[in-house]
Image (cartoon, rainbow, N blue to C red; front, side, top):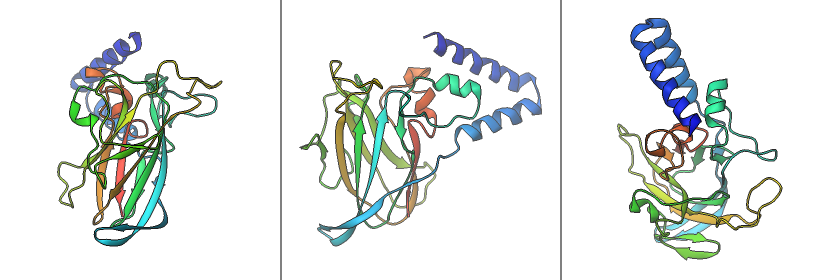
Length: 241
């Protein structure tokens, strides 16, 4: 709570500096914003075979993502660009090993998630449901489901278009279940058996999209700041190539 207040105060001071400090401060804030939005190294889905669909046989690509509640000795945090940003994001959740996702066009893609975080309740029940998968479901610990209870969600993986994107429509949203409070943990503090989720979807023509988490797991306004607005943590890019 104290850190959130400090971040809010820092944001207020920076905002005031823009008004009274002239061009140098504006440039400094601009550089900070660009650095905050810089992309980590891309994670590219690997074509592992083919999959039969209603449209015929298509390439099938797969990739693995993990979600951690915080960094540890065994799992380093995503990179940061300043001591202030590093302090701001200490102890915050993140996707790993990258938030820059690349998948093949005109293919079937499966993302396998290992989810290590706790959770709570979503603000919007829309994001408790699976949207955009091949059959409207996802596999959770080996069982097909099409939604989660509103108060049992840890994070979401929600892909959508840039507002100005004149490209093929694409939307995918996957809720990831929380780990129970009494889940056994290892020396790193993570559950020894994470929640395992797989979702399979169809891509179309090439396009550039963004994704973010829709669970309120951050700082500041309605808990949607901090890691939730930082690429490399709980938001990123999704390239169909």
